[in-house]
Length: 138
Image (cartoon, rainbow, N blue to C red):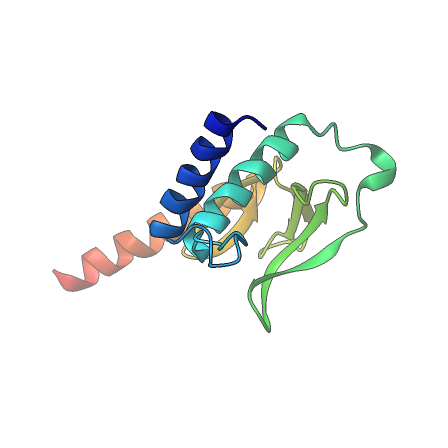
């Protein structure tokens, strides 16, 4: 290394030490905080999930979904074991008990989920009950 290059490197090291990116022994100090690390990895995971073709042999069987640790939801999910993306979601109609995947359910009314057929029945029943309630108020 020439004298000028060595001097430039030494000045860079001094500057890095001054800004606490390197310690006294020229070891790198990790200045990244947990939030920055989470954001970086979140972007990497998103990119991986976008690129992943979710091969059939990498898809899990139906697993219970939890909205928080120890708190089961009404859903079961299938996850790609390669990228971790949820590829399908299943639940049961609260009226008839029919098993539905995410593209089959019509609506969630008052926190309850219904198939398309039962959703119409429930909406009609709710309308009738609403009319009865309004009449009783008069």
